[in-house]
Image 1: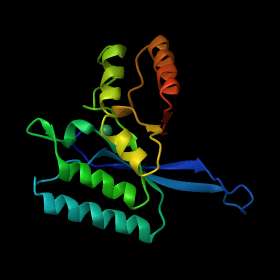
Image 2 (image 1 turned 120 degrees about the horizontal axis):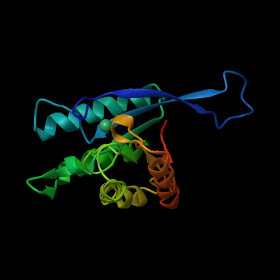
Image 3 (image 1 turned 60 degrees about the vertical axis):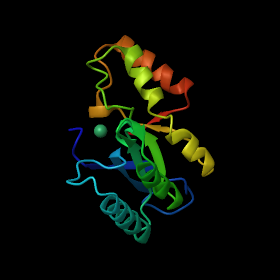
Image 4 (image 1 turned 90 degrees about the horizontal axis):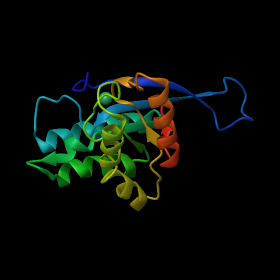
Length: 170
Ligand SMILES: [Zn+2]
């Protein structure tokens, strides 16, 4: 669902290999940023909810990645400063952002070239925003987790991601 906030728990290898077991780290990821289905366009509400969420994650020391659809940054056709500010809040709180494409298309339903163009459009704001915070955009998640319907498309898209420095978030 494009309009539903959901999160996935991902088990990633721990960086602290010398630590005693359990040798795993839990990372929480959030899709469809800067916000998913919220019953309001109220900026204050969105900022409050974002801040509360991030404070909870900080309090529990939960590493988190938020996956962005930059199409949602636009209000009346132009990028909205408040919505971009929500993304900056994530970064300044110590979390990472990932690319979830611009408009949340399915790779199973549109041509590869169109999908790749949508992905690149989806980093227009996020990549420089992260660079200004000293971070590198590296995570990608497929909308609907759709990875293409043929081995050729899947392989070509994997190469595209590698070329552009992306890692697929499991
Ligand atoms: Zn999504």
